[in-house]
Length: 442
Image (tube, rainbow, N blue to C red):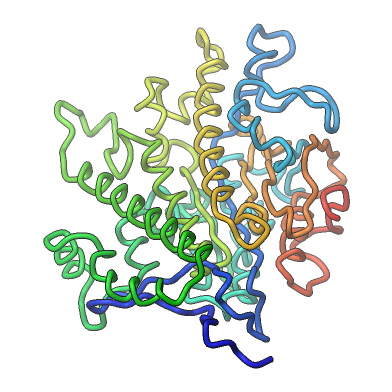
């Protein structure tokens, strides 16, 4: 079909002063033969240390038990997941899943195999993570094959990983935790200019978007009313995220007074974990919105009191995350743990709302993005009955709205396999999967 004069290439960029900015999907963008104009995405989010699961005999059981009560579509939310009520029809809660080969290992080791399903019970021989398997297929269409993020930088260390992503040889892929660096990676650096030089220039001269105004005006004149509104909304969201990154970065320059470093590890977002986590989520939304990548991972914190994320609850007056998981015998121990679970759900709900706010044709970015959210332990050291939520992906063929309970006969890898297949991978299995989760697929 002949290309119309008003059609835009899917890879159209705004350019100015050596900076380039990817654009979101617009009606004026013609469909290419080699890729879908509305691609599917996948996202994997991990938190450590299990969740609050007070026993039936405990007074906190009814309110602060992470898993809902009831059956199927008639389940009842408890307080830890209450922030997700608005997205009931766009999430599935999965109970009883685990990696069979990990059920007897120390629970704090499960982050290493959360996305691989490998057997590290005797020797540490990890395998490729599902996000990297997906990236091998989808990466040919995007500038960034996969976005690997954490609340700490790097890889951590064996059995206390700082990243969820592992390559085809089972080697850890370093995760990025610096909002400014992630922002610059997504939206490019001028050729020949170092990252510190660009940071300095942008700080001294203003917003990245200020360099793009002339090209933006030229593009807007080519667009219809719908696309003009979409472009304006997108650039507004870019500026908001840029300002939020600036705030986060500015705070990092200020030392916290009267803090004993033996008791707290001050890094990005420790004193304002909500803003930090939401900044990372915002960056992920922009990465998907601009089709800069189609697969991402984010490890909110490391296991076993490691790294900055363990201190997030301290900023809320709840103590360390690992300490919460071991403090259930203390007064209000389950309640305090559940309150932090609720906090994490609030941030997850925010992420879903941001994805929901981005339209793509007759659907939303949430409809086109499958999000696996959860942990590799139920309680602190118990590597069974993972708390898992699958969200989004309605346009990918995922059915939601119910609580699904599984037995040990269903491996957790069936979830990975289901997502991979919905991402277009022509594979027969992943890790020890036995099939797709048919009750979730249409």
